[in-house]
Image 1 (tube, rainbow, N blue to C red):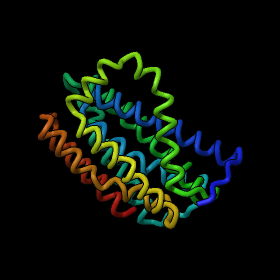
Image 2: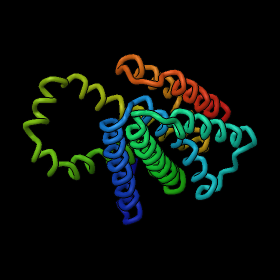
Image 3: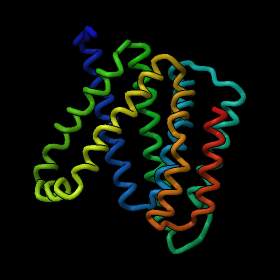
Image 4: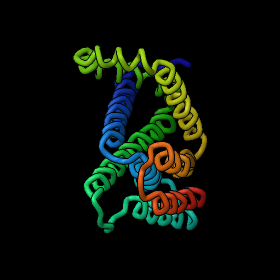
Length: 230
């Protein structure tokens, strides 16, 4: 692959690097202050909806009737998972989950639509786009890592194999998404990658003993149904 180091292409790599960095920071903050079974389905459910809207507005894609119905189901599922209007002692945590979940979904939509533009309109190779975003994040986070180096060292010694697995699987998964976007509409690919929503809710409720399992499961099933229609 012969990459043209033009200002346009380098700028595109920089934009996707910034979007990916902010996405990871917001997502991890959401996991720290709220339940996984709220943040994960909200982020993964709202992301495809906003990606589809962005693809229609900026990439001029034309979703059909089933796609619109699917978007409506996803929105309904998001509202159910978020627990809007439900009183309880965990209202503050639910609010944080809603804010960080939807915020993460917005960032997912931003980088998905932009990366769709990069691989379709700018003809950038998916491997190049994904590979360049990681060194950018390393450089951007290096000052923070240096200040917390003892803590990072302790995490590495205790969880090194988990870190390695995540470091391999996460970029590989999104690289497959980029190749799919290169040959298929963004409003189809973006929802298809979110089929793990139900699994995330079940694991959050069972392994992390999070509450309100049934409404969150029902909401995640609505999101899944909407994704299938999309």
